[in-house]
Structure formats: structure tokens, C-alpha cells
Amino acid sequence: MTRIALLQAQSGIEPARNAEALVEAVHAAARGGAEMIFTPEMSGLLDRDRERVAAKVVPEDEDEVLAAVAAAAREAGIWVHLGSLALRRPDGRLANRGFVIDPCGEVRARYDKIHLFDVDLPTGESWRESAVYAPGERLVVVEGTPVGSLGLAICYDLRFPALFAALAEAGAQTISVPAAFTVPTGQAHWQVLLRARAIEAGLFIVAAAQAGRHEDGRETYGHSLVADPWGEVLLEMDDQPGLAFADLHLGRLDEVRSRVPALSHRRPMPRVETVR
Image (cartoon, rainbow, N blue to C red):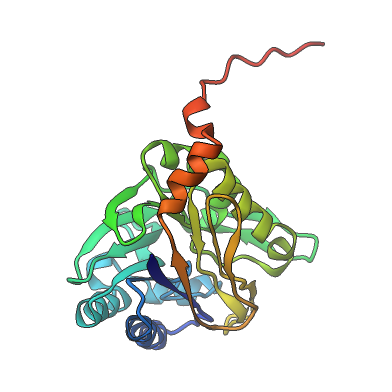
């Protein structure tokens, strides 16, 4: 059995304050017996004001949130999946980048969000992530974590099942989906998509989310969730910030995959024939 912790955050516009909350959560997770803690997308800075963001986003090696969380992981002796941070790339564009940090405080892996959220919602909300962020170009599986081989995704990636299939075929036993889902899309699709990805890929899904009303005026859905390979919900939080724990039995993977061996049955798709 592996105990994990999920931080459901309400990140704001000041990286230093967000770093303090993350460090506190890392230590609380370790005290609670967790071997690994998962945090949401944009754990270090959640702000839709582009001018404020531009003034605060720095390159990875200068980021105070990453440095603080890595130090906390080392002090607490715990793995951390820092869901994502906004970071400046050498070309001047931004990356929405997640990190896996080991108990020695070393960054073991990085993943830049591939699918960017560009959408106009019926509520009047409009999001153009691609106007600021550059998409990632590679999939990542991290071996040897407390949750087995860990595949990395971020938020809007959830809507692209081929990404999850590719991670499963590369050996992922768990996939993490840190997120900052809007309330309308969260109410409609959050749980059903997470459970579907777990069932399709036959693995654990761990999704730490942002929650509540934030300093920049947005509202996020929360409901951080853990699903097992059968699609059973092991943990679902509410819409308030907090820390919660879940226990994963990795032996469940073999049990489910032997009952429904879909991964071994997957075949290349034939050409589509359009009939008029």
C-alpha cells in the first residue's frame, strides 16, 4: 500500500505566499504518512493579468517556488509532484511546466503542458493560453516513484485520450493530472473524464486541483480526485482548499489489466474511409 497526499490549493498572485503554502503542505503530507504529495497546476502563480505575470515569471533556475519546494522535499524526505509553474523559456515565451522532485530535493523530471486551453465559454469566460505559453513537445514517464512509473499530464491534456494511451503503452502505472479547471467545465466533465482515462489506460489517475475564488477573480472547480484502474473513485475532495490522503494498492493494476487486457489488444487504426 502506498499513501499519497493531494493538495487542493487556492493559489494567488504572489509567488512567495504560494511558496509558503506549498512548503507547509509538503511537511504536513510527510507528517501524515504520505510517501508523495501532488499539487495543482499553476501552484506558484495563478494570475490572468498578463502584465503582472510578465513581471513575476522568471527562468527555472531563478524560481523561488521551485527552490522552496525542493528544499522542503529534502527536509521532509518525501517525493513531490509540483503540478506546474509558469516559467520563462530562453526564447521569451512561457512554459506551463510540472516537476517531479525526489526526497533528496533533486528534480527527477520535467513536463511542459502540450495541449493549451483556448476556449470561449457560454458564461462569457474566454481563455487564450496559447497567446502566452508555448506547448510542450514530449511525453514523460518517471520510473521508480512511490506510485510506480508515473506519467505526466496537465489539465487540458485530460481531453486527449491518445496522450494517456501513449503514456500507458510506455509503462505508466499512474498518471498525474494537476489542474485548474473552470467551474462550468468541471461540473460537466471533470469526474467522468478522469474516470474514463483511468479505465481506458488501466491505471491510477491522481488529479490535484485548484479550488475556489482566487485573487485574480477567477473561480476554479476543485474536487481533487484519485481513481483506480477500474474507475473506482478512491478520493474526491469538495470545492474548498485543503490537504487529503489516499491509499493506492499497486497490485490492483495487474488484477484489472488481467480482467480487461485492453492495452495488449490495441492496434494501429486503419485509414478512415469517407463515404458520400
